[in-house]
Image (cartoon, rainbow, N blue to C red):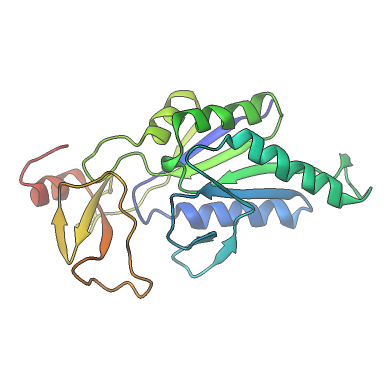
Length: 217
């Protein structure tokens, strides 16, 4: 039985790198994968980019009101049609896996779509994302993934102090902020910190409390 996997971690824990590596591993073995991400993630437009400099276009974007399963079905059919009768070991060319980047931005209903893709369509789905926002509140997509995914895997990174990072601090113009909308994607392409530019830093619990003045949420 195919499964829904959620691989999560704080910012800069290598989620996109891991996704691109997973895609490479499948394709190295002659298998076809589909890559997708929520359309709300405007950073990189329709690309998935790792901090190592590797980029790749997604096969489709998932709009905020879209049915993720319908979008997947259309892309899967295109793969099958393009196969033109070609075969791989074990059967006709088909999608071997669906890989989702920035899964925290999905709606709960879209995560349910991913679950149905795995169970009813028989295609493994691996979703990558962060659990919590800059105020330590769970993103709706992440909360649903944590509730229904068959497999959970934490991708680890470290805080500036060397401890394990578990939180994501929002930095605007070089200063940590603790108010604002849950989603703010505004990092400059050159990584600059102009006053209006928003970036994020992975923090351990101790450093987060130090920056927030003891505030959680």
